[in-house]
Length: 470
Ligand SMILES: [Zn+2]
Image 1 (tube, protein in one colour):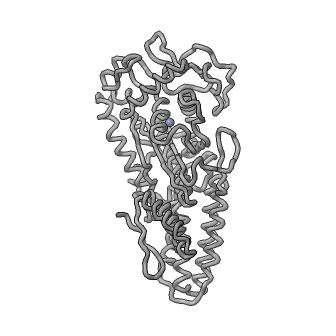
Image 2 (image 1 turned 60 degrees about the vertical axis):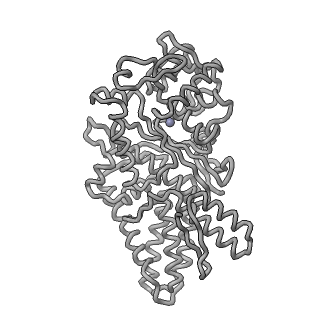
Image 3 (image 1 turned 90 degrees about the vertical axis):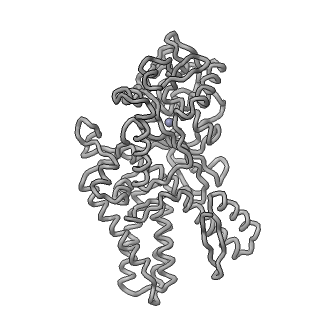
């Protein structure tokens, strides 16, 4: 694979090599379901979706896990304010998150573990850290991670470890980099926690997990001790991801994630989004205003994921116009070819090559979209000049759908309910090639892999195939 990705851990672009190809394990930190996720959160989730879809396009079998934070300082506070139990408060926001995900055409992860469903695993992890002597029980009854006893602490966020204050503690889930201290793994139960049903019994005292603990416990449960890729927003680098590394690596003695990827912030009209400024945008606001998700994804795609994006109404209208041009070309390509021109074929092949080159370069989606718009101009000119053959039209449409399938920037053509579709399609293409080369063993192997993705492949009389979900 020629894919190169920026790794926050090394601060450099590196060739991506999965631990056990073609399998790729991907863990992405999910929403805190205390309220609706805002469009800045969704910018990160869409970046992760494009990463996942591109890996699948490139032939990887991605196992994607996203957690749902349904117990932490914010959810408890919000449940308390609403006079509800924790689960009563978080349930509708979890549901809203899934609706927004589907609207934005984000392929569903294979697993969405909720923190409250993983308390036994988190208790086991805390016990392990206590046994290893890297965690201790504070005089407030909570359990803390002793960062001075984990030599790698600060490697991801590059904090100066000499500034670490031995024994100084922080009990809140979020805190500043200047305040690197022993962080809380398990918080002793307080009356507010008990009131909303956010307290559990544990051998080291009744309480509830700190925010960072859940990702270490849940990623280990589903994906093993070492992940290929771990993603999140840049705001999670410290303390959340630094603390995840400390908990996981201190427990297992193995590297936690090989590649760390972080999406940058989104600003609205040049200012940080906040309820106070009245520029707090949610996905449902955009849906209610009638925007097609393709326009939003087109807008996101116009700024590289490692740069700050400035969201404006004008930019959204411009992106909507771009997405519509893609939709118009798609309709032209989908019309049956009735002519004799093959001109579309080399144009489509060049477009797919340009797409791959851009995406392999640390997911350069702005460049990939630029290439797509070049293809729109060239293909429209070719179609104006001469009608294509049925074969040329079909081949150009195949390329167009494959490429835009990764970005999901064509209006009204979502396939969010079909997470493995692209990967199954790629394997089926490879199988067809293996069959025409009479490599039956390879073809059978691929058939098994396709089955693992939840599809059945059947050969058709004309040498093609059909993919079906049994
Ligand atoms: Zn996390």
